[in-house]
Length: 87
Image (tube, rainbow, N blue to C red):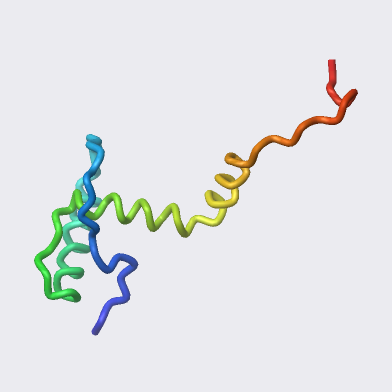
């Protein structure tokens, strides 16, 4: 059976260092994800820490509410018409 993973590779970029604590079950899931990925790609399993950034990227890229809110966040504010300001 071939799995259709959301991640197909782990980019090798220069990272920004963060320290996070994960629940043990999440760490086990990351280990299992890496093992499945290794089986599918024929490459060595990536370290669990290397999976976190691409997973977060994928999550945020597919979160429609976040995408919509982010667009609104970065829109320049419209100038107000004279006299429309409240006191």
